[in-house]
Image (cartoon, rainbow, N blue to C red):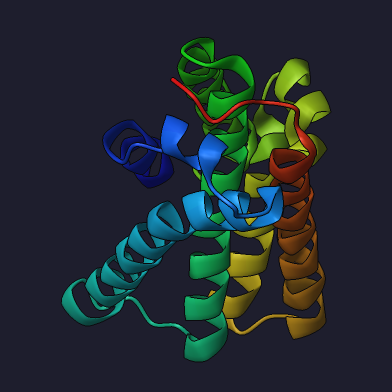
Length: 173
């Protein structure tokens, strides 16, 4: 939800970049940096609130913080891709993807208890791996499982950043 709010508030498209001397990769990373920085701050505030204010106990604090920040960056990259690729329609796609991830990610309701549709789409979303990894980090479970899930989330992040860079889109409103 934080990624969606960031991308609705922070302008990510501008015509000035078309006439600059920067490479496409520099432009992609530059346009990702501001939302990613804000997303990192959101993740850190959420982590602080959960741990210090609400008293949540986390067995592997550093891993937890890294995990939440990388998840934030991943969701920002995905949503930014759809905004660039589809323009205004990307906002609708992002809301639909957010809804599908929340219902099939297993964070609020066990996937095994969900309808068949949600069990089928479950493995195709990064939130699935984020929730699984965070569970392991919070309760002190299997850190290998947590690390593997973090790598999958990083794979989504890198994949969508590469797609942003390769996607033939002019950075113009």
